[in-house]
Amino acid sequence: MGTVATEKPGVCEAASILVLVPGGADRRREGRALAASLVGDELGLVLRGVHPDLIELLPPEGKERIGIDQVREVIRLGQFAPAQGRRKVCLVPHAESLTPEAANALLKVLEEPPRDLAFLLLVEEAADVLPTILSRSRVVRLPPRSSHDALLRLVRAGYREEEGRYLVAAARGEEEMSGFLEARQDVAALREEAKSEARLADAGRLAEMATSLRPIERHEAILSLLARLVAGEAGLRVAAARALSQQGREGILGFLEDLFFRSFDLVRGELSPSPSASDDGVALLVRKVDPDRTLGFVAAIERARRAVEVYTPGEAVLLSVFVLAGRLRRG
Image (cartoon, rainbow, N blue to C red):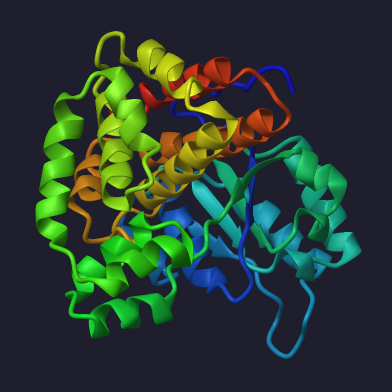
């Protein structure tokens, strides 16, 4: 993979978005949260599954498969303009339950999709859908939810629940989490110190912080970098891409993984509980970015990660991602 494709800001290029979910995820809840960002109207109605522009495609009661007649009904409904939102969204929480006939009918509509209808297909593995549907879909990998057990351990160690959720979001794995469990730390002071430094850091220092082994410093640096890119800070995207490329392949991959999770928090926003739901840095960015563009940005980060894995030059990959970040602003 020589380059990372860019996407037009504000445009849902693929009529279908294929979301790869971890096992055990609440697919309807996650799917509705993503659908809400696409419908863009009366978010509470979408989350409850009662918005007029949300179509949920599920197996009929008492059956395990979605049949062709149900897909045909969705196609019929898709011919009508959205009632309230930006577009209609057909949510298929268990896309693997489509019968072969239903899957082929869906494929046909994806070849010539109605202008104002998008499909959200949720599966655990890409192989759970037809390869031809996969090829016509934008693929997004859903990051795992925070560990409830880890949060409980942090609370028992004396952290407030809000602090615990923040630390679960910031830490990479058990080793980093253990540092907070072994000795209680002043999370508020560490966050404020990291925020202040990241806000004023040049690209080189920001790159060091964003790949740090200190979770709070790394977390705040990534949020600050993203906020500064969204704000269009002159020269930052080129300088940051160059500085981060000096951190080595593993450093770049770790950075992209963290950036992926933080960006997905922006897509979720405050629509459903997430590790960063009470993170003021995330909340501030949620108000500034367009959710539809951010969903495309998440997919671009995933493509960038795969590109780096096959040894595409890191600076070029990072620059393409940072260019997209500058297009996330609302309006």
